Length: 312
Image 1 (cartoon, rainbow, N blue to C red):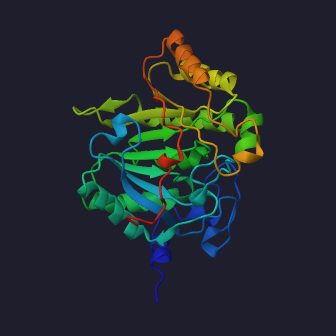
Image 2: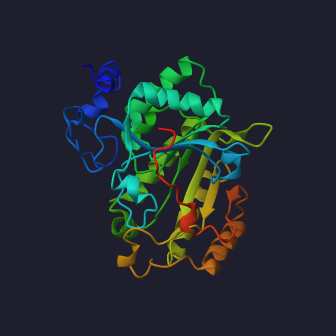
Image 3: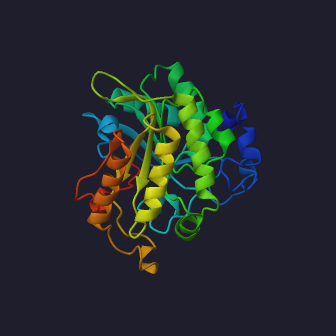
């Protein structure tokens, strides 16, 4: 019996990226094709936990029809507060072939999705590229969004040039001590800032269609954590100093203590709304105009997707 996934990978020019895996800064150098597992525990096989027309992204992404969102399993971070920990750290999901992934993209387009939204895709980049090639050859034409934590290897992002229309990176922390404590991510800011710079250089300033749906560009997300207002301000300082108005910023107040957050009393609570308002004012005082903000009521477990393998 032929292993379809292995056969497809053998025809991929990106095969080398899995033979000695260094897709992210952890550089595990494991041979995923031979079954070795690194930090993210992803194998050679693509694993997906849910596919859906998602309505809870920024308005220019979800629009009126929803974003064709693919939630990939596993992750190269280990955030203690991760709301998606069932798929990112436990590994809940279903294995699919590259061919099936390409079909999923086309199915979402047929359902009216404004775009294809790849959530936590880093560790599957070689397979995603092949699936995109196949889907595009069969008529996939809507924008492709790369929704990541920005803890990436620069060569991984360079390999995506021409395949990704919109980058949606996080910029989680400025100070390394927080990145280490809450996400086990050494040198996070140094890595992520360079990655975001590469993303911006690839796709340039944001462009929207007549309905206000983003077609190209970068939206940088920052989730405020309780007690880290100063760190958040440093993140904003960097973004505005480096990119000015060439990118959009998305300030999120939806932090909900989940997973292992109970072990960290300082973040085992919801965000102080006054701190969030203070950060908004800080952006306004700097002169930032291209910024998405959230209203109250977003900090709820009700917004966490049910990873039921639907659409997979």
